Length: 273
Image 1 (cartoon, rainbow, N blue to C red):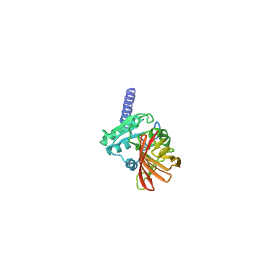
Image 2 (cartoon, rainbow, N blue to C red):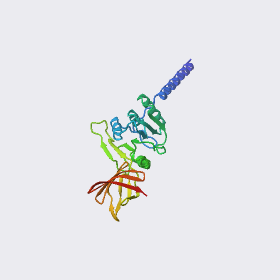
Image 3 (cartoon, one colour):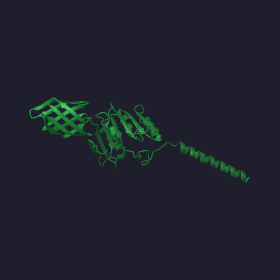
Image 4 (cartoon, helix red, strand yellow):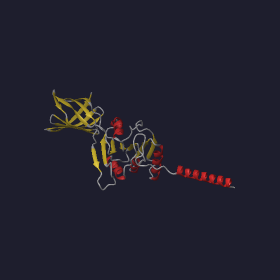
């Protein structure tokens, strides 16, 4: 009799353990701030920061927004709510499924897509906006891919920047925001590539660049003048040389714009050799 009771109790105990394990397995995945990932620890940006990134990136329905290491998908979902097509690249498959569920709940599953992939390997060439919260080591490794985006593309990020590539805009969220740490939003405008030797109707110029910073010389009538205050803003280039201010739009191997002289603004065109 005691043996039967023992086996009955033991069997019931095993059934209860199996039921508890099944319930635990059925519980939806919930990420924890600070959890380790393949390339970066997951720490979510607060809603105020997400909104500021969308604002800085001037996200509209014309954009294709991408987030690398997209976590729970909040940047991608925010962009989709603004009408943009958006894609999150995330290595953790549980995060990918969570992001898809949250996008469905937000009613933007048609615009917010998520893929399980390595962010370093994924093709980002079609993005017009990158919305990111990555560590400097990640940003530095991805910098060549960012620089190869189409001129004028926007990169917005929470706090952490790119070595040697200064942001075009920095905005710190006010103390009244939800943000308690990592509260600086950064914006980069991908510059056109203008390095090389250019010919002009009355001379030539040789330009170098370090991301959006421009240096070089302009030679008119055999007299070289140093380029100063050279700057790129997407395809827009501005610099001063020999007391003259040059402004133009760089598209491929042609720059078209104006040069401001003491006698007023004159048309200016340069062609890269």
